[in-house]
Amino acid sequence: MKCEQDNEQITRWISHQMTEAERTLFEIHLTQCSACRQELKASQQVWDLIGKVPVPEPSDAMPVRFHAMLDTYKRSVEEKRRPWATLLERFRQLWALQPRSPWLIVLSWS
Ligand SMILES: [Zn+2]
Image 1 (tube, rainbow, N blue to C red):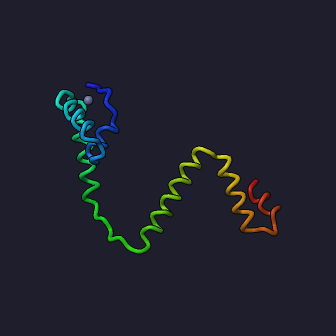
Image 2: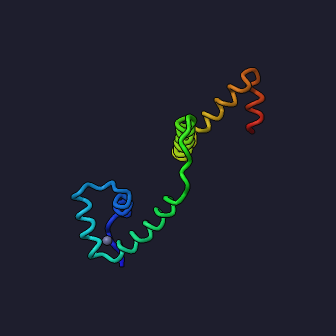
Image 3: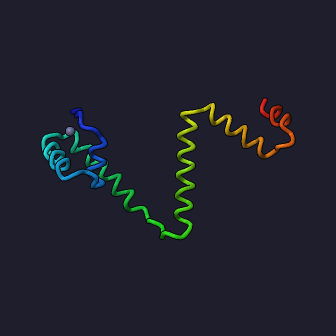
C-alpha cells in the first residue's frame, strides 16, 4: 500500500522536529496507515544504527574540521550545479600556482 505522506514527515517525527500539533496529526495517521508504520520502523532502525556509532569527543579542531567538511560539501553541490564555474575556478587555481607560465597551463589542459 502506497501513501501520499512524505518521507520527510517520518524523519522529522523520529528526530523530534515536529510541533505538538504536527506530531499528533502524524500519530493519528500512523494508526491508520500501515505503509507509514512500515516506513517508520525501517527509518527507526537506520536512526538506531546511526545512534550506535561512537561519537568522538569534541576537540578544539572540531569547528574547523566541521567548516572544512561543510565547504567540501557545498563545493561538491555547486560543482554539480555549475560545471562551468567550477572549470573557471580550477583554471584560476592553476593560474595561481604557476603565475609565470600561463601557456604551460593552457597546453597541459588540452
Ligand atoms: Zn501513511
